[in-house]
Amino acid sequence: MVDYEQTLRLIKLAQKGDEEAKDMLIKQNYPLVKSVIRRYRNKGVDYDDLFQLGCVGFVKAINNFDVSFNVRFSTYAVPMIAGEVKRFLRDDGYIKVSRAIKSQAMEIRKYLSSLSPQTPAPDISELAEKFGMDMQELVFVLDSNKYPMSLSAPIDQTEEGSVTLQERIADPVEEDTKLDHFILKQLIASLSPRDRKIIIMRYYRDKTQSEIAKELGVSQVQVSRIENKVIEKMRKKFND
Image (tube, rainbow, N blue to C red; front, side, top):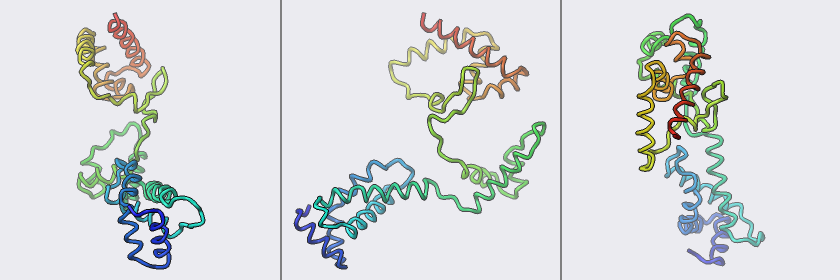
């Protein structure tokens, strides 16, 4: 790493158009750039792209740095590097989708929303035929219009309130939870056929209360009451 005085000298040369001085500054500060972009990994952007963005921010820092600031250049460069990455994530998003694909997705969703509740929902093959696509293309188009969900986003509504996505995502199984899983399995097996079916559909097949009610030919209120009653009974047995 070059010392403070040499860094200032190279910055002055780079600001005057000396590309060799600019390249030397960039190479000498690779560790700084990497340390900043590391926090933005796993954001849906390739690491090499993040590094290039970091270098763009670093070059902007070189061009805009004023030696009269009386601060170390690295102190000024860090927020410039981070700002370039955050600007990309904010303005460009995680997934690039063409306007044509977005229009296709909108057209398909508009058609689906126009169907009456009494009309059976078309399957993938029927939709693909209607819109002149193969099934893989149709699935890609529909998925392209989805956005990342917040873990705190409500995904289901019950009489007790809303259920968030975070509450429906299972934690990794740890060794000390295996016994709990065994007990839970025994409790579910001890339920009546109807109650067991509702619990399995609800928590293992990820179906909503409305979907379960439709399949069983009962109301959503009945499903909700049965579910709450069974959960409370299982909780008491589990804690005994």
